[in-house]
Length: 190
Image (tube, rainbow, N blue to C red; front, side):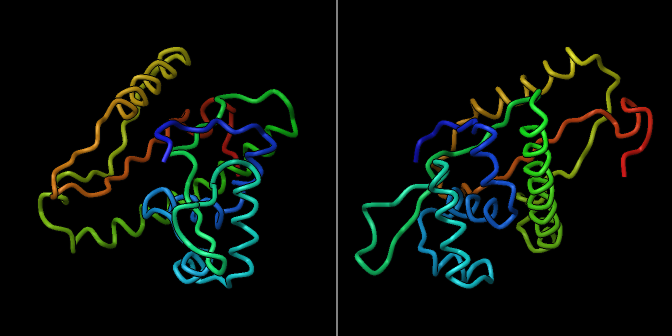
């Protein structure tokens, strides 16, 4: 898998505005290559819908055929990149609408993943429980300092090397950083 990330165009980003596609891409990134049938079973979907979503992801460069697996009957898919990044601001109204739809899907998928992690927390070994956190911090910052903080955190995450130790597991870090709702816009957004 390419260890870089992709910053999709607004047109390509439309492919990720559906939570099912985000889940599929996440599974291919984390669990490795799979067929449409395997993904359909994992996600509780029919294989026709799964194939459609996979074609959409492939059309926009998020996934690719895994030519080292499969045969004429089974088509295997793999993630083309390790992560997806988005532009921090969008000027075009149509692109902004796509970005907002994508971010809504990201929020749904991240919330589901965090909920499952909390539900499993009593079952994980103590060292993993101690390594986990569900914390938040609130700072009073200027936009420039806030952006610098986000970049510093992203740089640290980007430079983290994976462990080769047999006790290593997939460890998820979700980063969401935003102005406290209702404070910059002047009112709560519903």
